[in-house]
Image 1 (tube, rainbow, N blue to C red):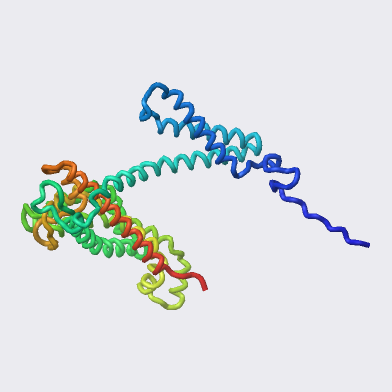
Image 2: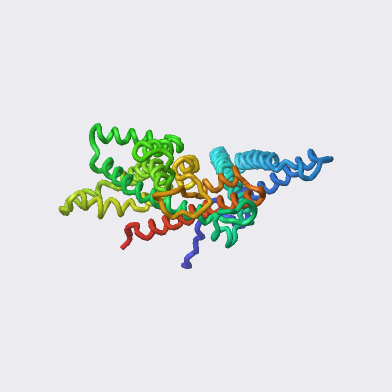
Length: 368
């Protein structure tokens, strides 16, 4: 007897001879993209007809995009309901709605970055990073004093805030019980929502009571930023520490390791990635503050590296000052302001990249 080869059944939806994705009850992968192109073409034709007789610049791009999205959603859901099933149609409708919502959220960010880059590159030169605004009332000048002020004040604020915030979160997660822990949690929640200018007023009032009125220093600015940073560090670090499994703590205790060493060697290394991300979020939260720095650090056109005496310029205040007091050349002042905003964005981006590298480098390795 000769053995007869049995061909295995072809899975549903496979495109073989005599079958296709349409007859198998599934839309082809290219169909949504083709439908999106057709929807965009129909929308452009509609708005082109409506724009006849007007100038080309009057074409409503936003309206055409919205109509194209509506046509695409209706067409895709209808086609999916006919070819596939009602469940697949509802799933595709949810996917389209979520994708549109994501694009709507992303659009202002892309627009903001594009505007800042286009307007800021015109003064992104060596002079901008090597000169100050001392004795400059027209063209030229730079933001060297503001860049140094931002870096110094933010660094001191981080040095003050990170240890306090991290130790507070450790206390709340590992030791905190009773009324004291509840009171600390309550005040942290209250501090998270205070306006930034209130932090500046608090530091000004405190320094006025201790030293006297009329003082503006970089250290005061760092203290004001610390008031805003500490609650963010506490809240983010607390959430990361709570995500550490209790089994890791119990295993360490079973080996006879004391609690403080368990926290230092087990809990913190396990949550270092999330803690680092929270710290960077707190720095990004305060590095662009203007109101508290206007009240505390003040503004100056000269380079000041001393945090304990004389006003110190920062990039947010520099941008505000260029818009508010453009001098004799408004266009040059606007270019300096946009360049300062772009520099601030780049500093935040670099800090976030460094934080990701640190989190990846020091995160525990669970593989063999």
